[in-house]
Figure 1 (cartoon, rainbow, N blue to C red):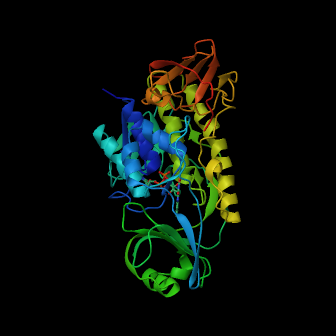
Figure 2 (figure 1 turned 120 degrees about the vertical axis):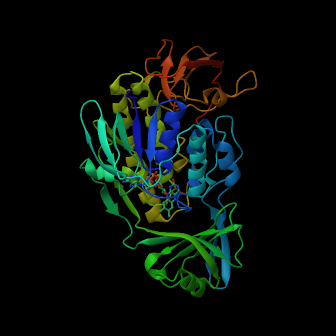
Figure 3 (figure 1 turned 60 degrees about the vertical axis):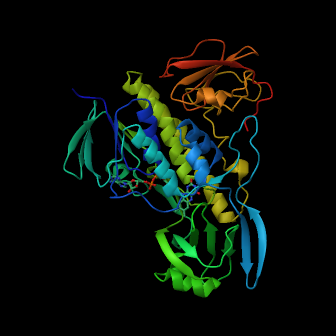
Length: 443
Ligand SMILES: Cc1cc2nc3c(=O)[nH]c(=O)nc-3n(C[C@H](O)[C@H](O)[C@H](O)COP(=O)(O)OP(=O)(O)OC[C@H]3O[C@@H](n4cnc5c(N)ncnc54)[C@H](O)[C@@H]3O)c2cc1C
């Protein structure tokens, strides 16, 4: 018998998150990945507070916290002198409303490994060495041909295949935008002799441009960044001559071009795009991976609901909610890249991102909470916390002692504030919790 299926293309952070969110909702999906083996680099190492909340919901927060660390302070090297500066991150204690207030550093390959382990546990392993070759869609489904020669008929196809997305090109879409630095950059994971691991070391004035070495938590490695042309192919030699420290081993390296680009559609019929396939960010601000994970988290529950017979119109809200966020985030990254400022915190933690203008948001404001906002955590009278009750694929109804009901979507955003019941798209059973929002803030 034909089983309703989603085919996800690309097992980076976005595709892995989507597969995990679908599988825990018992939606049949396949996740194919062109590479033969998992990605090994540290690349997107900054996990924002909002993404930590999502990883908590997806059941991988413990290994993420154990594998990571706070952002170190910057140490600027000027010839024989060095000055210790601030940090791109913070180390604040949790608040009543925000259990994870700090930017957390985890090498991207570790984050992907934890998502993959959870997927394996749910019985949905990544199919490596399998690329999308081509696909055609009609009103009822998508026929896809894979590089293995297999052809499959699926209900939906999701391109999470990164900045050079085959799926996006096949749809006739194009990433529009600009290169914001003409010079390509090198990023590499390296062993360095004799450098302290407490600081993120920056040499701003070495010949050819800035060199940075950031210690990666729970590894012996540093993430090296430098202008690619300064380094050429002789990474060890050039870094040694420039900064006087010897590089023992280059564990991974890659070149990228700082750019801000996005497409103007996230959906064509039964084919969707998410992550770097729809928006490409410069590293400044640490937003790319986080935005991709949150695209997937927005799409997962909607797809699951539609595949169970919910109205397909729900899927239109994916693009209308996520595209404006990508545009705003790209503007922020461009600003941070060009101004070279280390100001971060509320600007970049993604806790304030909201869907207030969405067709899925209704009702009235309650104190400083608006329909469409991320629901903050709330301590409850029995000593538990609202987030504990929200964990899992269901929607949550928060019956406040102040009177109104708050309906919280499965992805943690407020759908509705008001008296009437509003469950039509909750998708999963709705759990009811009682408490007070008095004194609750967004962060
Ligand atoms: C130096 C640097 C630092 C960064 N720092 C941060 C940071 O601190 N925080 C942050 O949020 N982001 C950061 N980023 C960005 C982050 O790395 C990306 O945004 C993130 O990897 C995007 O995830 P993705 O899953 O959408 O795409 P990708 O990670 O690119 O994954 C796409 C996957 O699809 C696969 N694929 C491609 N084509 C096909 C095909 N035809 N068939 C099957 N599979 C295919 C690829 O092999 C790949 O595994 C940084 C980026 C750089 C370069």
